[in-house]
Length: 407
Image (cartoon, rainbow, N blue to C red; front, side):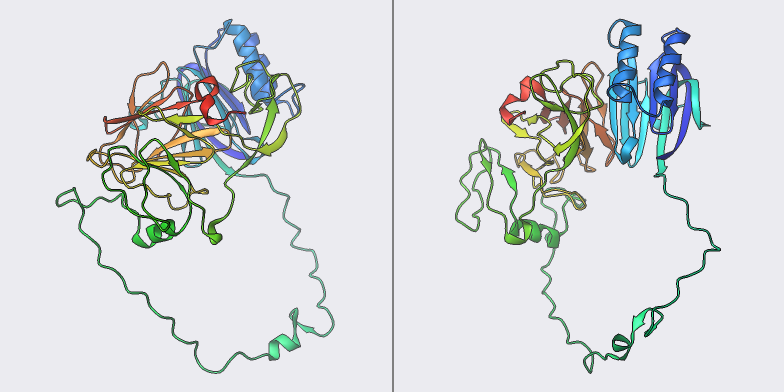
């Protein structure tokens, strides 16, 4: 993959070339940096993945986890990242931003310089994928193939002579447009997080998972009768025929000694934390990546995305039909469409949907930070998300999320 990398000078060390980039606290040992550089620039790693070998070298140098480390691997057209200590990896569109400052506001950071490849003193790096490597274009001097006999510009004569039906096509019936109701609780300001009514109608015709809060009063009746869920149950109506499709994504995986599937870029198992022996990755259906624990104690399995809000619906453009978590209607600072949790390979991403009350993200061992609207944040196990300071959920994996079916 072709990337454009820019860095801000600092007291850390940035090493990278092509698909692999590492930003780490300075180990103050040139031999360690030479070992990491050799791993990043070799064509084929001797054992395991490049990321796994880099982390092993740095763990030995620091006698444990480095105080600050951020790694990005863009090989094979995919994307994986690892962060330790104060290291931070942020997803911004297709870009990956590595930092040793916990992800400060870009507007407060130093200007950056361009870097093709190498080793420099830095505290932040911005990596932008430009294109995948492609085969060279054929020579312009190559002669064009001769047309086949009986063809004019490659089109059969029978097709050229064919005629369509006479007259214009019949007019299509137009559906009546229902008037848009005024916003319920925003005064003179409309709630811009409400999805398009036509899109909502398509959602209501299909199947999805809905978790209802216990505080809701009269539940609305569904096509099969009243909805009598009490807030501690998960409703899974049968999908309409045109929406019966899987949401499982395939990923490259390795197995730990207990048989759990995990990412090839991670040195230890995501479930039991045991060391993973070097092995050839294989492509499998992605297992659940943990769970999202609600204040009620219920765990929403992360086998697909999740949308939380007072009136949640699938996000347009998303690749799956998510779990829908209905927050209590009396939480007026929580928007109808407030937070989107999505899965990207082995990563769990969170996006605030430009909500009214905002979302505070707290990573383990870090200070809380306010999420910027529509920006994707890579969640680490134990991360908590506080919606409008009235509803807090937590991302769990491994034994803590055993109720969601880790395998």
